[in-house]
Image 1 (cartoon, rainbow, N blue to C red):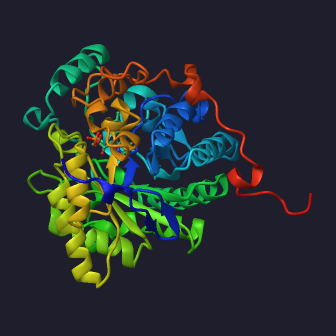
Image 2: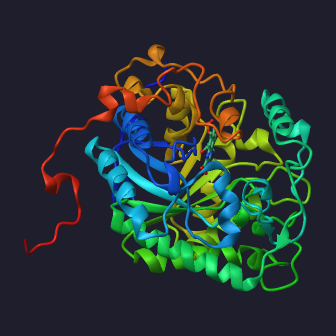
Image 3: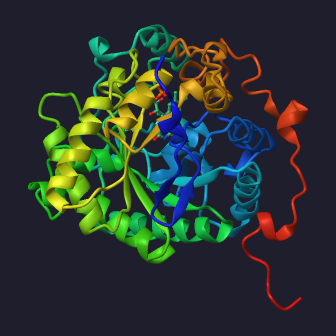
Length: 428
Ligand SMILES: Cc1cc2nc3c(=O)[nH]c(=O)nc-3n(C[C@H](O)[C@H](O)[C@H](O)COP(=O)(O)O)c2cc1C
């Protein structure tokens, strides 16, 4: 068994010290309370992962606007951060995570684009061009076919899985970019350590990056620079919202894995632009989209590792300095330690591995690797229920989704105010 010490070396993400190299990947698991605010269950669920030793918790995609075009997102009752009334739950969540020694980043999204659905809100999805996404059965992870067939049956023929979107207008893009900047500003005030722009997985920004879905002839289409424009406008607006001294990351799929899509060489260019023009401090990778779903939700371990190594190296060669890279879906501790030691990424982010076992980090640190409850990548409890709009569960972790009823997760030590709250008016 490899030595895992490298995973427990602290890392500076800009000015944020993360105590180890283990991040929780953002996952919307349908725990949000009505009106898109943070629920007690959500707080306890994230607390469990912070108590389990995870160094950095990246909160699930949060809608960063109230614009009509983002409404198709409401199907999965995502969190939203746009109005001040959504702040207090957000602040409570950040404070709880900090109490247990982890740092936290809020992932902010300008919308689902053509992967949204009018079935839930009556609003036609928007996209760079009026081209629907395609479901490719050969690109599904195992088990996903069953899950999607069940969904199609429940939704009925009137609501197909994919529908033709409307071409989004430049004034709408401007409004969305403005709004994600406002959302980022609120995230900073709420006490987060950083913000992340959500740009992977075939959602709205990804659709602009992709020559497959972006056939525009205006300033948002054509060249790679034009396709990157909307992502950069969102990043610049977020940077303006949070100021220069605050951590800003962007999540992007390493490769689209589709004909006519973008590939690793393009992603290196997109990341370069995100850093030099958008002001991003670090890159959080993912892979694929709903069209190439087996890359977005891999069946095998470490699928993004080599892409991550190429992108990290390409960025260093292009910019002459290390840009921190976060790589998802490495569940095996040996592979995680070897890959970080080899400089293939700086931090690993874990999604389903932490759903299955919130104590993953503590168990690795304490040499209890054999005690880890392994994710089987079955997708049945997490994404399987998520696509139905149901709160996620986990077939190997019966506590998942029940954290609010478990005392060690639903309480927190009462630390002195100064240790947990960043903002206290000085004149009291
Ligand atoms: C139920 C579920 C919800 C997800 N939601 C998000 C999300 O909100 N934002 C995001 O960037 N990725 C999301 N993902 C992708 C994960 O962050 C991660 O990249 C993916 O699950 C692969 O990593 P893993 O093998 O460790 O699970 C989601 C994945 C799952 C299973």
